[in-house]
Amino acid sequence: MDVYLCIDGKTIVDSPLYNESTYDSLFEHRDLRMKMTILSPGSKWGGREDGNPDNTDNSIFTAPKFNQDRQGSVTPTGYYFTKYCDLDAVPTFNRDENDIIIMRYAEILLNYAEAKLEQGTLTQDDLDQTINLLRERVGMHPLVISELASWGMDLREEVRRERRVELMLEGQRYFDILRWKRGDLLSGDVKGIKKEFIIRQNDVQNVPTDEEGYIVFLTGNTFDQSKHYLWPIPLAQRDLNPNLTQNPNW
Image (cartoon, rainbow, N blue to C red; front, top):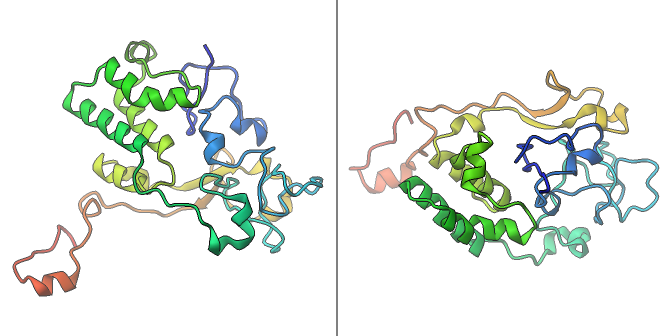
C-alpha cells in the first residue's frame, strides 16, 4: 500500500518516507491533491522570476521568492496557490475567465458524509459512495473505518480533514470552523515553510520564526469563544426592526 500524508502533514500510516530536509521534500509522499492546490517545484507557472537565482527557465517554478523587487511573484509564506490559476491569464490578472466555484458535486458528497457522521449512522458503504469517490479520483488510499480505528485515528477528524483538502480555496473553511466550534484554529499564528529552505537568505533576515524554524507570517490573532461564533446584527437592520436584539457580547 502506498503511504501518503495529508496536506497538513497527518500520516495515514507512520511513514519513514516523508521528511522536511528540503523545500522539494515538502511535496513528496503527501495527499496527491496538494500539488493540484499548491504550486510545487518543477511545475509550470506564470510568475516570471522565482527565488532561485540559478533557474534560467522562468516558465518553471523551482523555489519561492521573497524579494520585493517587482520582478516576480512574491510569497510571504513560501507557498503559492496553483488551484484556480490559468497560466495564460497571469499577465492579465484582472481578466481571468475562470469560473468561481459556488457549489460542486464534491461538496454535496462531503456534506452527505458529514451529515451521516453527525447522525451517528455513517457506514463504510456511505464512505465508499462519497469521500472515497473523491480519493479514488486522485489515486489516494480509501478511508476504511476499521483501518482508522486500528491506526488510532479519529473518523470525525478525517472526514473534516477531507473537507479541508478537497474544498480548499472554495470559501468553505471559515464557516466549517464556526460550525464545528473550533474557533481556536482561527487564533493561532499563520506560518510558512522553514526559513532555512529559502535560497536567498538575505531576503528574509528580519522574518520571524517559531521555535522550530518555521516562518511566522501573522501573529496576534484572537478569537473570543463567547462572541465570535456569531456576527453582529447590523445597525441598519435593527433600525428597521426595533424588536431585534444584538447577538451576545456585541
